[in-house]
Image 1 (cartoon, rainbow, N blue to C red):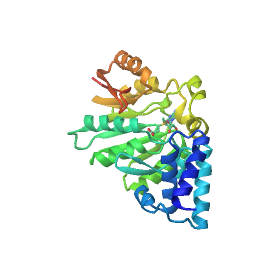
Image 2 (tube, rainbow, N blue to C red):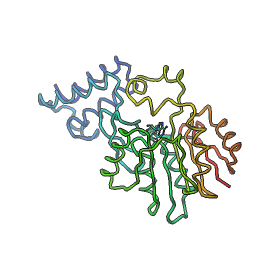
Image 3 (cartoon, rainbow, N blue to C red):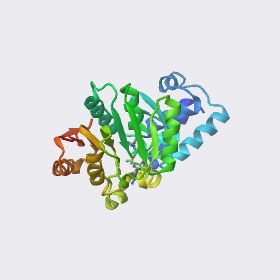
Image 4 (cartoon, helix red, strand yellow):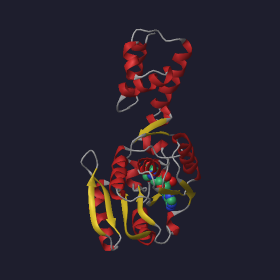
Length: 275
Ligand SMILES: C[S@@+](CC[C@H](N)C(=O)[O-])C[C@H]1O[C@@H](n2cnc3c(N)ncnc32)[C@H](O)[C@@H]1O
């Protein structure tokens, strides 16, 4: 069978399994199996596959057909300027979180050596992207999950970006007047919402990373102590809760509370400044 034929068959198979973008996923997975770019796949459309290549591709398509997230099957995923290792130990970094990082970088602009805390770092995506794009920053990242921290450590090593990684439960507090910026993409999905999510999230991503109803409030509370006067808190939130979180930050005494949209135009980022 040729590249074109196996792609057509894999696309049909993935579509039958309910995968949202079956052709794109099939191309990316065949690219991984053959170590070819998508453009090269098109150029080699009529090239027959060797048996070991077909076996390798079949296994990747089988995994995706079980609705394992594409990023886990590929084993790596792009986030800002970095390519991060991705697997079941942590949430797949999302495009809206890139906008969260954008806001952090804007708030840190002009500070030569800011101290930053990333709460619930998962793969390390936010912490590593900030450290990468704001040279001079000293970034600490905490997570309660040792598995996630192990992945973050691997990502620090593979990207060559240094951050301090600490196993810590956010509910115990975040320190005293230490940071210029506290950022978090906390778990914010309710139990009821979780049951309705796509299998990729529900069956594969860590539940600890997705389900949580009090984390946003707790971080807002603890960050007020952990920030230096004038420091900023930046939170990713569920779009329908952005206004409620903005009101919460105001009640907690934060000033200049602002809501920013993600790339899809949904209210997703809420920030405030400690007076
Ligand atoms: C939504 S994920 C975000 C991961 C990563 N920051 C990102 O944006 O891709 C939330 C993270 O919070 C961590 N977490 C959950 N409960 C926590 C707690 N009580 N203390 C610290 N981290 C916690 C989870 O292990 C998970 O890695």
